[in-house]
Length: 463
Ligand code: OOG
Ligand code: NI
Image (cartoon, rainbow, N blue to C red):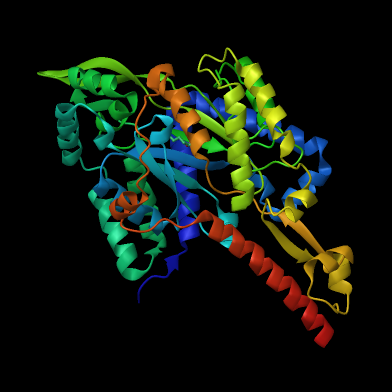
């Protein structure tokens, strides 16, 4: 008898818990950040019982401060292809295409994440995954050497590869195999204190771009940050220095609002860590900065129309003030952002009526107690108080914000001018699959909730 499979959602939960424990242990400042986030979230919930009740109804309150995402950077098409298969075992699929060349970082990316409300509810953990684009590097000799170094490494353990193949062949893993899979997969994301290259090679890679050194010099794509969810990102940003952590200069994304939209993020600067580099007869100590911690606060998912308005206002505010890496104009940037975003409606009903955000619809208590209604018009049902609406949470990322996060931890001089060269087709061919469209996902959630409301009301009429 074959053993029953555990669900992919359960494997993902075990994996994110294991990753969190490993990272806290390896990066102590991250543990401090987690504690701070927990304290701030507890304070917000105590001060706002209505929000606490809403979260209790929609979310697992006990897990409110847990990780929502992490990030890795892989070096080759083959690595990207296999990482897609690895994440699929945990019910994580590539959503969205992000071109960061435009923002001075030689990578393009996707986010592996659970898809569908049920899976997100069990555990929303996702991994922002970037593929290095050596073709954007001018120095041809260095490009060839870096390619050769990458071609020789194997970032997956043999056990991990076997279990991926088994999950694919059998449609899942038994409980014991899932436990082994999590342990084997974790090895790919672990920090390797011994570099794969000599210090001279490291320096050359580093001079070409710090990101290239980070990807090419090591045996694997160490997880470079994990990110818990906070209910008040401004408070955590402000409290970080008192807890001995240095935050990046500005919070990325939209300004502080009554009705949060999309995603706001901030991070603490990457730490300098000791690394052993190869020398002729052994190892020589040096250092590398790579790993940091981040926090996020999520708001409503915007429609293409809302997203276009967001992009326009962000561009406008960056014309007034562009955040300097040293933080010298952080105040000006914040002011410009709030002034520009005054043009973005800040109440839920306007966002809905203007078609800027996605909402779910459900029956109110009155709707549940009713004998149905004589109309299929959602606006009329809302007016009668039979139906209510709630914002759909944004589950994806933002390219300009991601570039800001990259830059703050790569160091101030890391931005370089690359010719903007999005190449989704190439990315998807390396990935071995098309990325899912995030807008289609949100639109489907909204329309399913609408249909469910109408069906429930018509069943009441009939009954
Ligand atoms: C990824 C940076 C992007 C985010 O939250 O936008 C990111 C990286 O530094 O590898 O994680
Ligand atoms: Ni991140």
